Image (cartoon, rainbow, N blue to C red; front, side):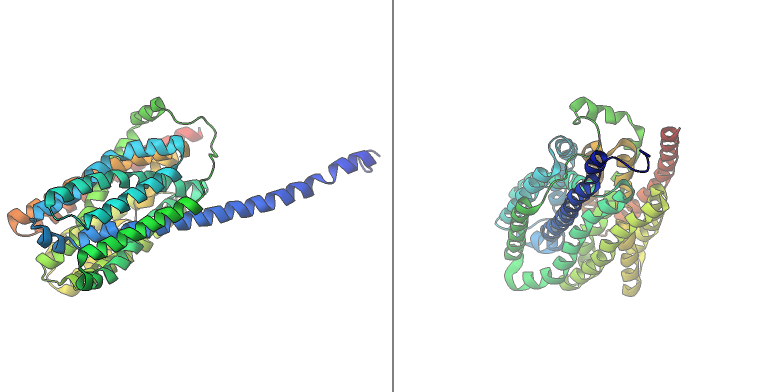
Length: 427
């Protein structure tokens, strides 16, 4: 009787529970979805504005070199200065993101980078330009690990490689916009005024981000990461293998994105406008490939396969880029390279987060990107020296092919280490 006919008191207390819970959860779910969409959109939009100034240095480098009377080696030093401070700031930025939250650091980073980009348009000497980029790189470091951590926190674990790949969509979208309108604006207004206008967009974007973006609360159990916790992460060999692959990844990215306009103008006789169109085509292929690569990795549940396959393709195209004779073949090689250039970006950054946890995502991302930017720093300078000494970029890009082959081997090592770690976790 009691089972079939509950007492009135019991019915009175039991009946409202489900409706009250549902009524409260619906607005919370809607608010969570709204904050996720807003936050993700703003991070990508800020990356668009950041891409205008970051990519603008490479696109306008032939004009900057003429204006400041720089050699190719000095042009490489301009990039190396920003990459040095950017790389050294990765681990501190990641640690601060894990400890204090990523939103504040991302805002400060974009605001500082954009302000210093504005001042670069007012500088007339090489030495001041180098100091400017050295300071700007430190602020840019505050964007990367916090930005990736912010995006990853809004998505479930099985979609985080895709989520992290979204970070680069904004940057390459900015590069597409820059490559299409930058040469035209520079032709009519000069590179300085154009660069200053792009920097003002970045400052405006930072202020909007600060006002509207929300930061998701911590959802994984455990205390805040401390300094000793961060140091203990260095004991994991998988971080060092990922770091080696990251060194190669950004070496390839720097060779293609920073030096491609100069290669087309100096070695292939392209005009700046034509080089800009090629750069726009390259960025148009790269932007969606970031997200698609993350999606493929999530579907296959095999990030090392995506990483190794991408590097194998780039090993071939890096050499073909400088030995291809005809312009149509050259454009096809650039298009294929652009697809795989960042195809494995999300999967490579995801592996340490997958194995070591979201709580340390900022620190592990910062560690990985430190190695990446050491590779970028070396490539930015060495390819400029190779061009000055040999009169061509050929041997520099052949060296990039060799590095990609090493990356394929490291991806095989990474696959074995990941399999063992996951197997041990499941036992």
